Image (cartoon, helix red, strand yellow):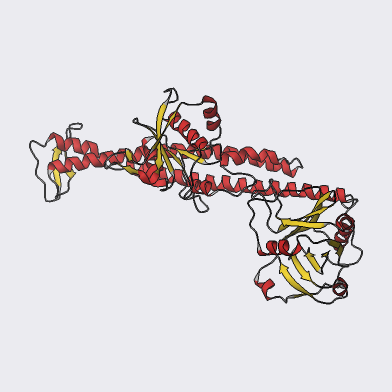
Length: 508
C-alpha cells in the first residue's frame, strides 16, 4: 500500500478477515502466481489455501521490503507459481500448518503486527513494518503471548545475519510508543471489497512500473551496444581503407617478374607505375622471393577487402538496429507519460517485450540470455537477425558469407543446433540450446523455413535441410565454407503463413 498501512488500518483488516477464515483448515501454503509481473511471481509473498465444507479461500501475505501487506481472496484464488523457488520457511509452513484449523486472526494493539492463530498452539506472526517486514512461525500459548510472555520461534522468513543473531524467542510488542488515533484512509477502508480492489490496482501499477523499467533498461542496453559496435566497425572500416593499395602493388610487381628488379639495401624494389608513369619504390620483405611477395600483396588485398566488406555490413546492421531502438524508446516515453496522467495500460508493453525477446510472467530463459550476451552492454551478443519459434526458442540467421562465418564459428556454442540447405550455398541458421536439451519438431520447421527464406529458396518447393550440433561443424581451411558430420535431414516446403508470422516476430 502507498502510503504503508498504519496500525489502525491493519487492525481494521484483521476485523474484516477474522470471521471469514475462523474455523477453516489449511490445505497448503504456496507462492502465488503473478503473471503480470516480470518473473511470474513475487519474492516474499505467500498464499495460505484454506478449505471448509463447501467453501474455499486464500489468505495472502507479503513481507516484501517497503511493500508488506495482507489480502483475502474468496474461492480458489491464484495458482501456485511454477517458476518460484521453495524457501526453507515455505517448507516449514507446509510441514507444520497443513491440515490445521484456524483459531483466529488478531492485530497486536497499536502495532503493525498480526497474529494468525492455529489449533495446537502455533501462530503466524506478520510484522508489517515497511523497513523491515518479517513473518515468524511461533509456538506458544495465545493468552501468554498476549500477556507479554515469550514464545518459541520455529520458523522465520528472513535469513540475514541480523535474523540469525536474534533470539529464538518472540515477545509481542506492547505498542507503547505508537501514535494514537491514526486516520483510516477514506474509501479504501470503507469495506473489505474496496480495500481488495485498491490492493489489486496497486499490484497492477507496480507490475506496469517493473515491466516498463525492464523494457527501458533493455532498450538502453541494446542501444548502447549498437552505438558502441557501430563506432567500432566504422573505425575498423576507416583503418582498412587507410591501408596501402596492396592489389595495385601486387599488380606492379607481377608485371615486372620477368625482369626481376633487385632488392635495394632499404628493402625496396623500384618499378614504374603505369598509371602515373613515375618510378616508385615498393617496400618488400627481404625474406620473400618476388613471386612470394606478389602472393603476399594479393593476400593482404583480400584481407583488406574482406575487412571493409565486413565492417560496412555491420555498420549498416547496427545503424538499422539503432534506428529501430530509438523509435521504440520514443514510443516508450509516450507510454510512460500517459501512465503519469493516469492512463496506464499494461497491455501496451507487450509489443515492446515481444520485439526485445522478453517474456512477461517468466524469468529470461538461458537461451535468450545467450543470444543477448553478457554484461551491462550485452557484450558478446548476436547482432544479426533473430526470430522466436512457436515454443519460444530464439532462432539466429546469417544473411551473408560474413554473417554465416561469425554466427557459426564465433558465436554458436557446441550444443547449439546448426542448420543449412543441403548441397547448395545457404544461410546458416542456429538454435541456441542448453546442454542435453533438444529442439521440438515445430522449432526445427520454423528454423528450416527461415533457412530457406534467407537462402532465396522460398519457391524451391520440397527441399532437403541438414541439421546437426554445431560441434560437428568445421570450417574448411582457406575457405569460407563449412563441412559437417552426424547430421539429420528434413524435407520441407515453406509454409507461407507460418513464414509470415515468423518474420513478424523478429527480435530487435
